[in-house]
Image (cartoon, rainbow, N blue to C red):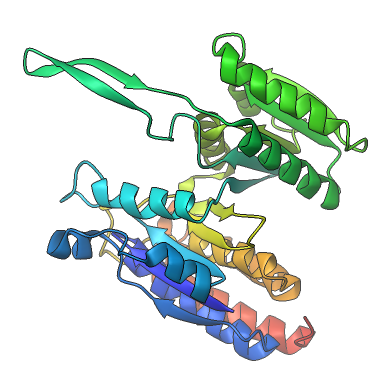
Length: 346
Protein backbone atom coordinates (compact mmCIF):
# COMPACT_ATOMS: atom_id res chain seq x y z
CA UNK A 1 0.00 0.00 0.00
CA UNK A 2 1.24 3.46 -0.91
CA UNK A 3 0.16 6.54 1.02
CA UNK A 4 0.16 10.09 -0.31
CA UNK A 5 1.31 12.38 2.50
CA UNK A 6 0.29 16.05 2.27
CA UNK A 7 1.66 18.06 5.22
CA UNK A 8 -0.03 21.21 3.88
CA UNK A 9 0.25 24.46 5.82
CA UNK A 10 1.08 25.81 9.26
CA UNK A 11 1.39 23.17 11.95
CA UNK A 12 0.63 20.51 9.37
CA UNK A 13 4.28 20.85 8.34
CA UNK A 14 5.26 20.04 11.92
CA UNK A 15 2.85 17.35 13.11
CA UNK A 16 2.90 15.24 9.95
CA UNK A 17 6.71 14.83 9.77
CA UNK A 18 6.64 14.13 13.51
CA UNK A 19 4.12 11.33 12.97
CA UNK A 20 5.84 9.56 10.07
CA UNK A 21 8.47 7.74 12.23
CA UNK A 22 5.50 5.95 13.84
CA UNK A 23 4.58 4.55 10.44
CA UNK A 24 8.17 3.45 9.83
CA UNK A 25 8.43 1.72 13.21
CA UNK A 26 5.14 -0.14 12.84
CA UNK A 27 5.88 -1.06 9.23
CA UNK A 28 9.15 -2.66 10.26
CA UNK A 29 7.67 -4.38 13.32
CA UNK A 30 4.55 -5.76 11.64
CA UNK A 31 5.72 -6.13 8.05
CA UNK A 32 2.92 -3.93 6.78
CA UNK A 33 4.49 -3.19 3.41
CA UNK A 34 3.38 0.45 3.52
CA UNK A 35 5.32 3.13 1.65
CA UNK A 36 4.61 6.82 1.33
CA UNK A 37 5.33 9.82 -0.87
CA UNK A 38 5.30 13.40 0.42
CA UNK A 39 3.42 15.82 -1.87
CA UNK A 40 3.96 19.59 -1.66
CA UNK A 41 0.34 20.69 -2.09
CA UNK A 42 -0.38 23.76 -0.01
CA UNK A 43 -0.09 27.50 0.34
CA UNK A 44 3.56 27.82 -0.66
CA UNK A 45 2.97 26.02 -3.95
CA UNK A 46 -0.24 27.98 -4.58
CA UNK A 47 1.52 31.31 -4.05
CA UNK A 48 4.38 30.26 -6.29
CA UNK A 49 2.39 28.64 -9.12
CA UNK A 50 -1.30 29.44 -8.60
CA UNK A 51 -2.04 25.72 -8.46
CA UNK A 52 -3.64 23.94 -5.52
CA UNK A 53 -4.57 20.50 -6.81
CA UNK A 54 -2.32 19.73 -9.81
CA UNK A 55 -3.75 18.61 -13.11
CA UNK A 56 -4.24 14.84 -13.07
CA UNK A 57 -4.01 14.66 -9.28
CA UNK A 58 -7.25 12.74 -8.81
CA UNK A 59 -6.29 10.18 -11.46
CA UNK A 60 -2.87 9.80 -9.84
CA UNK A 61 -4.32 9.32 -6.38
CA UNK A 62 -6.81 6.78 -7.70
CA UNK A 63 -4.20 4.72 -9.57
CA UNK A 64 -1.16 4.96 -7.33
CA UNK A 65 -2.36 5.34 -3.74
CA UNK A 66 -4.64 3.60 -1.26
CA UNK A 67 -4.92 6.50 1.17
CA UNK A 68 -4.01 10.13 1.80
CA UNK A 69 -2.66 11.51 5.09
CA UNK A 70 -3.34 15.26 5.20
CA UNK A 71 -1.92 17.64 7.81
CA UNK A 72 -3.78 20.96 7.57
CA UNK A 73 -4.69 23.66 5.09
CA UNK A 74 -4.92 27.40 5.72
CA UNK A 75 -2.55 30.32 5.46
CA UNK A 76 -2.97 34.01 6.38
CA UNK A 77 -1.43 34.95 3.03
CA UNK A 78 -4.49 33.44 1.31
CA UNK A 79 -7.38 34.88 3.34
CA UNK A 80 -10.12 33.49 1.11
CA UNK A 81 -8.78 29.92 1.53
CA UNK A 82 -8.95 29.41 -2.24
CA UNK A 83 -6.13 26.87 -2.28
CA UNK A 84 -7.64 24.92 0.59
CA UNK A 85 -11.01 24.63 -1.12
CA UNK A 86 -9.37 23.50 -4.33
CA UNK A 87 -7.26 20.84 -2.62
CA UNK A 88 -9.58 19.53 0.08
CA UNK A 89 -12.94 19.82 -1.68
CA UNK A 90 -11.28 18.69 -4.88
CA UNK A 91 -10.17 15.46 -3.23
CA UNK A 92 -13.49 14.93 -1.46
CA UNK A 93 -15.49 15.27 -4.65
CA UNK A 94 -12.99 13.84 -7.08
CA UNK A 95 -12.45 10.69 -5.01
CA UNK A 96 -16.14 10.58 -3.95
CA UNK A 97 -15.24 10.56 -0.25
CA UNK A 98 -18.84 10.83 0.82
CA UNK A 99 -18.46 9.27 4.28
CA UNK A 100 -16.72 11.33 6.95
CA UNK A 101 -16.15 9.49 10.23
CA UNK A 102 -15.35 11.50 13.36
CA UNK A 103 -15.12 9.30 16.48
CA UNK A 104 -15.59 11.16 19.76
CA UNK A 105 -14.01 9.44 22.78
CA UNK A 106 -15.56 10.44 26.10
CA UNK A 107 -15.67 8.99 29.64
CA UNK A 108 -19.21 7.83 28.81
CA UNK A 109 -18.00 5.89 25.75
CA UNK A 110 -17.19 6.42 22.09
CA UNK A 111 -19.68 8.20 19.84
CA UNK A 112 -19.24 7.50 16.13
CA UNK A 113 -20.32 10.63 14.25
CA UNK A 114 -20.80 10.13 10.52
CA UNK A 115 -21.11 13.18 8.29
CA UNK A 116 -22.10 13.14 4.65
CA UNK A 117 -19.11 14.77 3.02
CA UNK A 118 -19.79 15.82 -0.57
CA UNK A 119 -23.23 17.41 -0.99
CA UNK A 120 -25.66 19.64 0.92
CA UNK A 121 -24.70 23.28 1.32
CA UNK A 122 -21.11 22.44 0.36
CA UNK A 123 -22.02 21.44 -3.19
CA UNK A 124 -21.24 24.92 -4.52
CA UNK A 125 -24.58 25.77 -6.13
CA UNK A 126 -25.49 29.44 -5.75
CA UNK A 127 -24.22 32.91 -6.46
CA UNK A 128 -24.42 36.60 -5.67
CA UNK A 129 -26.14 39.66 -7.10
CA UNK A 130 -24.28 42.96 -6.70
CA UNK A 131 -26.08 46.09 -5.59
CA UNK A 132 -24.30 49.44 -5.44
CA UNK A 133 -20.85 47.89 -5.57
CA UNK A 134 -21.63 45.51 -2.73
CA UNK A 135 -23.14 42.06 -2.46
CA UNK A 136 -26.87 42.66 -2.39
CA UNK A 137 -28.12 39.08 -2.64
CA UNK A 138 -26.28 35.88 -1.72
CA UNK A 139 -27.59 32.39 -2.41
CA UNK A 140 -26.23 28.98 -1.40
CA UNK A 141 -28.38 26.00 -2.33
CA UNK A 142 -28.61 22.82 -0.26
CA UNK A 143 -28.59 19.96 -2.77
CA UNK A 144 -28.94 16.25 -1.99
CA UNK A 145 -29.48 13.32 -4.31
CA UNK A 146 -31.35 10.27 -3.10
CA UNK A 147 -28.56 8.03 -4.37
CA UNK A 148 -25.95 9.72 -2.19
CA UNK A 149 -28.13 9.78 0.93
CA UNK A 150 -29.04 6.11 0.45
CA UNK A 151 -25.51 4.84 0.04
CA UNK A 152 -24.28 7.02 2.91
CA UNK A 153 -26.97 5.86 5.34
CA UNK A 154 -26.63 2.22 4.27
CA UNK A 155 -22.86 2.21 4.78
CA UNK A 156 -23.04 3.93 8.17
CA UNK A 157 -25.72 1.61 9.50
CA UNK A 158 -23.69 -1.38 8.37
CA UNK A 159 -20.55 -0.02 10.01
CA UNK A 160 -22.38 0.57 13.29
CA UNK A 161 -23.87 -2.91 13.22
CA UNK A 162 -20.51 -4.54 12.45
CA UNK A 163 -18.83 -2.73 15.36
CA UNK A 164 -21.45 -3.87 17.87
CA UNK A 165 -23.45 -0.68 18.16
CA UNK A 166 -27.14 -0.90 19.08
CA UNK A 167 -28.35 2.72 18.78
CA UNK A 168 -28.22 5.30 16.01
CA UNK A 169 -29.53 8.87 15.85
CA UNK A 170 -30.35 10.85 12.71
CA UNK A 171 -29.71 14.58 13.17
CA UNK A 172 -31.71 16.84 10.84
CA UNK A 173 -33.87 19.99 10.70
CA UNK A 174 -36.87 18.78 8.71
CA UNK A 175 -39.22 21.14 10.53
CA UNK A 176 -37.47 24.20 9.05
CA UNK A 177 -35.70 22.69 6.02
CA UNK A 178 -38.43 20.35 4.84
CA UNK A 179 -37.32 19.17 1.41
CA UNK A 180 -33.86 17.78 2.07
CA UNK A 181 -34.84 17.07 5.68
CA UNK A 182 -37.68 14.82 4.66
CA UNK A 183 -35.47 13.05 2.13
CA UNK A 184 -33.07 12.17 4.95
CA UNK A 185 -35.91 11.03 7.18
CA UNK A 186 -37.45 8.88 4.47
CA UNK A 187 -34.16 7.19 3.57
CA UNK A 188 -33.13 6.69 7.20
CA UNK A 189 -36.42 5.06 8.15
CA UNK A 190 -36.40 2.80 5.10
CA UNK A 191 -32.78 1.67 5.45
CA UNK A 192 -33.19 1.09 9.18
CA UNK A 193 -35.66 -1.68 8.40
CA UNK A 194 -32.78 -3.79 7.11
CA UNK A 195 -30.87 -3.46 10.40
CA UNK A 196 -33.13 -4.93 13.10
CA UNK A 197 -30.32 -4.87 15.66
CA UNK A 198 -30.15 -1.07 15.56
CA UNK A 199 -32.56 1.12 17.50
CA UNK A 200 -33.09 4.31 15.52
CA UNK A 201 -34.05 7.77 16.75
CA UNK A 202 -34.24 11.25 15.25
CA UNK A 203 -33.45 14.69 16.70
CA UNK A 204 -33.52 18.23 15.40
CA UNK A 205 -29.97 19.53 15.21
CA UNK A 206 -30.47 22.31 17.78
CA UNK A 207 -31.99 19.94 20.33
CA UNK A 208 -29.29 17.37 19.63
CA UNK A 209 -26.49 19.88 20.30
CA UNK A 210 -28.14 20.81 23.59
CA UNK A 211 -28.48 17.19 24.66
CA UNK A 212 -24.97 16.28 23.50
CA UNK A 213 -23.43 18.92 25.73
CA UNK A 214 -25.61 18.15 28.73
CA UNK A 215 -25.35 14.36 28.61
CA UNK A 216 -23.67 12.50 25.72
CA UNK A 217 -24.14 9.06 27.29
CA UNK A 218 -27.28 8.04 25.31
CA UNK A 219 -25.53 8.36 21.95
CA UNK A 220 -23.59 5.63 20.13
CA UNK A 221 -23.87 6.38 16.43
CA UNK A 222 -24.88 9.69 14.84
CA UNK A 223 -25.72 10.35 11.19
CA UNK A 224 -25.89 13.89 9.83
CA UNK A 225 -25.85 15.90 6.64
CA UNK A 226 -22.76 17.83 5.62
CA UNK A 227 -23.29 21.14 7.47
CA UNK A 228 -24.88 19.65 10.58
CA UNK A 229 -22.21 16.96 10.78
CA UNK A 230 -19.51 19.60 10.52
CA UNK A 231 -20.97 21.45 13.49
CA UNK A 232 -21.87 18.60 15.82
CA UNK A 233 -18.53 16.84 15.32
CA UNK A 234 -16.69 19.97 16.45
CA UNK A 235 -18.88 20.10 19.54
CA UNK A 236 -17.86 16.50 20.13
CA UNK A 237 -14.21 17.50 19.80
CA UNK A 238 -14.71 20.22 22.42
CA UNK A 239 -16.21 17.65 24.78
CA UNK A 240 -13.15 15.45 24.23
CA UNK A 241 -10.83 18.26 25.24
CA UNK A 242 -10.22 20.22 22.07
CA UNK A 243 -9.61 20.01 18.34
CA UNK A 244 -6.07 18.82 19.03
CA UNK A 245 -7.55 15.43 19.87
CA UNK A 246 -9.95 15.12 16.93
CA UNK A 247 -9.13 12.74 14.09
CA UNK A 248 -11.17 11.97 11.00
CA UNK A 249 -11.47 9.65 8.04
CA UNK A 250 -13.17 10.50 4.74
CA UNK A 251 -13.89 7.33 2.82
CA UNK A 252 -15.27 6.08 -0.47
CA UNK A 253 -16.54 2.61 0.48
CA UNK A 254 -16.80 1.48 -3.15
CA UNK A 255 -13.11 2.07 -4.00
CA UNK A 256 -11.67 1.77 -0.49
CA UNK A 257 -9.59 4.93 -0.79
CA UNK A 258 -9.60 7.22 2.24
CA UNK A 259 -8.40 10.66 3.29
CA UNK A 260 -7.24 10.76 6.91
CA UNK A 261 -6.68 14.08 8.65
CA UNK A 262 -6.74 15.89 11.97
CA UNK A 263 -9.43 18.54 12.04
CA UNK A 264 -7.60 21.21 14.04
CA UNK A 265 -6.61 23.35 11.07
CA UNK A 266 -3.26 24.98 10.38
CA UNK A 267 -3.14 27.06 13.61
CA UNK A 268 -0.87 29.82 12.23
CA UNK A 269 -0.71 31.47 15.66
CA UNK A 270 1.46 28.64 17.01
CA UNK A 271 3.09 27.42 13.80
CA UNK A 272 6.87 27.23 14.02
CA UNK A 273 6.98 27.21 17.82
CA UNK A 274 7.34 23.44 18.17
CA UNK A 275 4.39 23.07 20.55
CA UNK A 276 1.71 21.81 18.16
CA UNK A 277 -0.13 18.77 19.45
CA UNK A 278 0.44 15.76 17.11
CA UNK A 279 -2.20 13.60 18.85
CA UNK A 280 -4.93 14.05 16.23
CA UNK A 281 -2.54 13.41 13.35
CA UNK A 282 -1.27 10.19 14.90
CA UNK A 283 -4.83 9.13 15.75
CA UNK A 284 -5.73 9.75 12.10
CA UNK A 285 -2.82 7.50 11.18
CA UNK A 286 -4.25 4.82 13.50
CA UNK A 287 -7.58 5.13 11.69
CA UNK A 288 -5.73 4.72 8.39
CA UNK A 289 -4.02 1.55 9.60
CA UNK A 290 -7.31 0.11 10.81
CA UNK A 291 -8.98 0.97 7.51
CA UNK A 292 -6.17 -0.87 5.70
CA UNK A 293 -6.84 -3.99 7.76
CA UNK A 294 -4.01 -3.64 10.26
CA UNK A 295 -6.03 -3.77 13.46
CA UNK A 296 -3.28 -4.89 15.85
CA UNK A 297 -0.78 -2.07 15.18
CA UNK A 298 -3.65 0.44 15.13
CA UNK A 299 -4.82 -0.71 18.57
CA UNK A 300 -1.27 -0.61 19.96
CA UNK A 301 -0.76 2.88 18.57
CA UNK A 302 -3.96 4.14 20.20
CA UNK A 303 -2.93 2.73 23.59
CA UNK A 304 0.53 4.29 23.42
CA UNK A 305 -0.83 7.60 22.21
CA UNK A 306 -3.32 7.81 25.08
CA UNK A 307 -0.66 6.90 27.63
CA UNK A 308 1.74 9.54 26.31
CA UNK A 309 -1.04 12.13 26.35
CA UNK A 310 -1.40 11.64 30.11
CA UNK A 311 2.28 12.27 30.85
CA UNK A 312 4.50 15.32 31.23
CA UNK A 313 5.79 14.91 27.66
CA UNK A 314 2.37 15.91 26.36
CA UNK A 315 1.96 19.34 24.79
CA UNK A 316 0.67 22.28 26.86
CA UNK A 317 -2.90 22.06 25.54
CA UNK A 318 -3.10 18.62 27.16
CA UNK A 319 -1.72 19.89 30.45
CA UNK A 320 1.83 18.68 29.84
CA UNK A 321 5.16 20.44 29.60
CA UNK A 322 6.35 18.96 26.36
CA UNK A 323 6.83 19.86 22.74
CA UNK A 324 5.76 18.23 19.51
CA UNK A 325 9.03 16.34 19.46
CA UNK A 326 9.05 15.25 23.11
CA UNK A 327 5.48 14.02 22.84
CA UNK A 328 6.34 11.91 19.79
CA UNK A 329 9.52 10.65 21.46
CA UNK A 330 7.33 9.38 24.28
CA UNK A 331 4.91 7.73 21.84
CA UNK A 332 7.75 6.03 19.96
CA UNK A 333 9.34 4.75 23.17
CA UNK A 334 6.02 3.25 24.27
CA UNK A 335 5.53 1.71 20.85
CA UNK A 336 8.96 0.08 20.89
CA UNK A 337 8.22 -1.34 24.32
CA UNK A 338 4.81 -2.55 23.21
CA UNK A 339 6.12 -4.22 20.07
CA UNK A 340 8.83 -6.00 22.06
CA UNK A 341 6.40 -7.16 24.74
CA UNK A 342 3.52 -8.14 22.48
CA UNK A 343 5.22 -9.57 19.41
CA UNK A 344 4.34 -8.50 15.92
CA UNK A 345 1.41 -10.70 14.91
CA UNK A 346 -1.08 -8.68 12.91
